[in-house]
Image 1: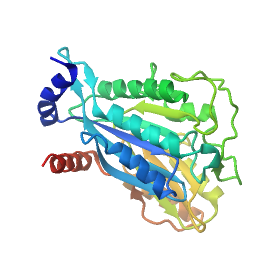
Image 2: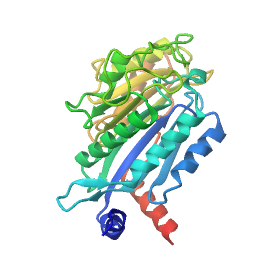
Image 3: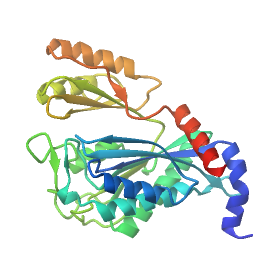
Length: 318
């Protein structure tokens, strides 16, 4: 029996067992709708992968696609195939072909056109399966597109954290007007060897981060002030790194002409959730005499992601 035929024979059983993987694909563009449409069309070439959500932010000039598909296994239980692999590569190819990082600017840090790809296990899938796919996609992007790839979390041999790698590469330092990121200003040769791809960097494509980890929630809190220094102080005090809430990472960023925002990554949202983060931000902002709006999640919950995937995949098959 041919490989593809074997995969097809197993599909229904695998989907019934809810062995699903989720990819969050962050791309440095949100203002050019033609480019976004080109990337989405690339994703739709394989109906077995489904975009269940898209979050665009024009101030950050950044988009995140949430894509879901199944994973298949061999007779020993090892992961051998997921449609997500080719879908993500097709979307990356479309992004690299349409976006020039040297011409990109925004209020959110970034190091690459395809800035970050993270895989999460859903339902009964495992973190090992997500890590397998992250490493496979990392090898493909590094080799096919000649982009340096840094693996992180479960995809890294020692579990190295994303924020540690980013800090080493200067990700968090604005390079324009003190609060913006524009073009490419880093050295052309990397001192830290990437896991995949070359050590030299194309300034038009930049660097890609690819990892696997349990579910992460992104929660952003608007601050009705242009005082980015105060917003950054609050963000740091809320974060685990600044002695605040454990498993919470934050960035204080300019967000439009009249406001700032604290972008939060909740690494264990079932332990430290959005309500605790919101309350802490409001308390600290009151000390600065700043007004805080209610925050918002930028993606669905894992259960809702699975529900949307199942509905969309069923609709496509019918």
